[in-house]
Length: 179
Image (cartoon, rainbow, N blue to C red; front, side):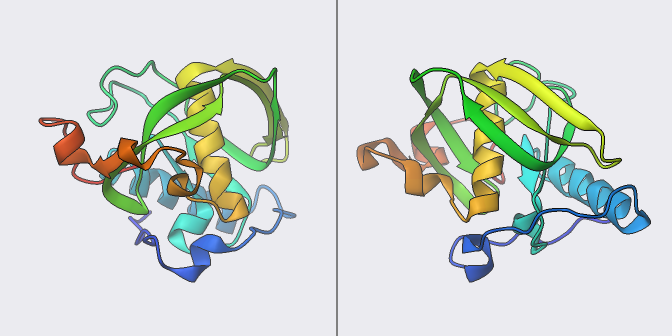
């Protein structure tokens, strides 16, 4: 188990389309997932995608076991490992929310996301996951899955007057690193 280096915006590896996971329940996959959780916890992240640590696989993790100092008002999200995800919006309704990213440290932006989604995929053992979620949970999943298609949240910001340094936008927020 190890904390991995997180790639920063500008690194071309963050812009690639990730490859599907085709081997499940392997030692290498379980070690990768463990390293990703160690990395996410080390920086108080709400989620992490494999491409953010230079691994070109359709693998995201997310979840909060307790109140996250970077998202103190957010509801808890179950700890999840999701491979080969597919997101289906449930309706046209979007809601704006402030997002940060471990690959875009120190900044936040107001990002529109679908309010309610269904996501499907597989767990590390190859067993199916199928959930319908809304609110912060839906936002986190959409944010992390964007990394699998080479998108960072600033690419989704519509109003750049609502994009800036976390310290300026949210004085006092514990935000040493962003996700």
